[in-house]
Length: 79
Length: 530
Image 1: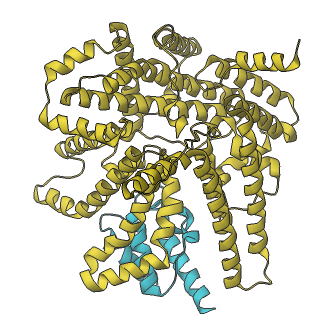
Image 2 (image 1 turned 90 degrees about the vertical axis):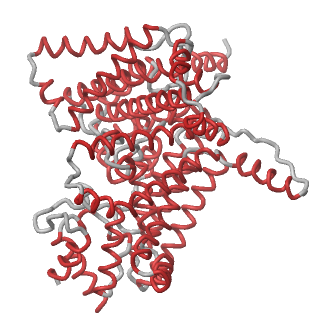
Image 3 (image 1 turned 180 degrees about the vertical axis):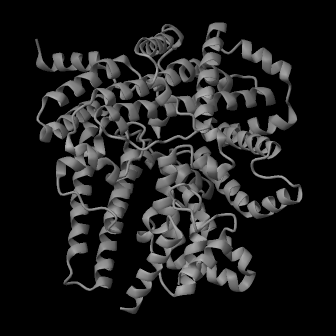
């Protein structure tokens, strides 16, 4: 799942080092337009629904955090 | 002597407690700090609440009760949302439905109060305009209601709080006094910064006032006073003269807009410095509202550095919820089918962005110039986002990078004009006047006339000197901050006599170069009217 997330991220913003960046949202590396695009791709790819509730720095600051969020939501969908 | 007479005179003597009157920082603030210090820790929040109410009362008299009523309402609704959140006997979907009803009712009620106090005359007059054209007899009697101080700010804060409880990002506050203090805390009351409830909770602990926080707080207040009294208030009469003068040509229009931009930035960021400094005394860190905005690379970046807390509010509570809504996804899906992926990509953000900037314009007040100001940034930011990719490709072709000097100069000049033209309309009495000013930049630009005008706009040489010194200091500080130079730490590391000498020099600079006396009224804080 992480590879797929990384693929989406690097396609979205090839200029960002997603392996090392740990403050994607906190430092405004990803702008609001990027976030919307990212969420729409994640929703389509993994068949989940990311709501405004999940929009916190904790969930989006790094590739690992985003993967964690997706895994949690996929699990919730399957419940 | 009559009791009412004494109270009336006491109120007159006390005056309006704006942040830049000496009564505020030399009497009210130290008195609050003193009482706070000598009271038991768990009672300190009540001290802050009582002093906040005195502050509120001095500015808005009995409209204080409107603030209290809103606070009680928000407190009760927060608890209701929490109760639904934690009632696991109801199914998730049903819980969500019920929560949504409560949240929407809350937001509509809070906005209704705001509209009644601030927008009713505007709505009435516009209805008259339309009905008059249609030949329907309808008349509107102006109500001219006075709004409670800070209503635009605390309404947004309470909407953010309720939404956070709804999303379970924040816990509902059980204590009513805590919510009352959140909604009326005097440092952030008049002009923000718009503070989230989670950022505010620290104040309830009643932490001891530390000499360091006292010093840092007062230094920050001094910095704010410097910006406001030395620059903003000195330049204010010139802005009025230029905007209201009979003569207008391109040079005067540009000059008026540049002067107003300086005034507004110094006035607003100065007031925020005073707010942040005042809260710092009580060990509370309010969020920053400005981060060297003129170093921004484009208009979107500018709004991440200018009135940061307002932009963040609109991003979190309008932009994201609309972008992520099912309706937006449906529209974007339909657009994708018809016009393809590249257009669909911008559809959802564009819809959300439209509402963000419409709200931003209207939030500033009931005027069409503000709506235009919002739409102006909506169009610019949308174009910027669409052109960003081609622009980066163009740079690659030209073998340039974002850091290259020509690119940075180009970006700065572009941003400069974007901002001052926005401010030109923002300050104009009517949209027509703003448009006339804009037009004559292209049709009637003569610098000799502009220079002539600068001599006759009620700033004397002394005033120009003060403004120039002030601007040099502020710009130097901004450059250092942008470069990451640890200015505060370096100042703190200086030997004590030098440090004290420096701060005394600052105090005397404000006293000597500040705008007071005949010919100057301490200008009202610009952002207090919004």
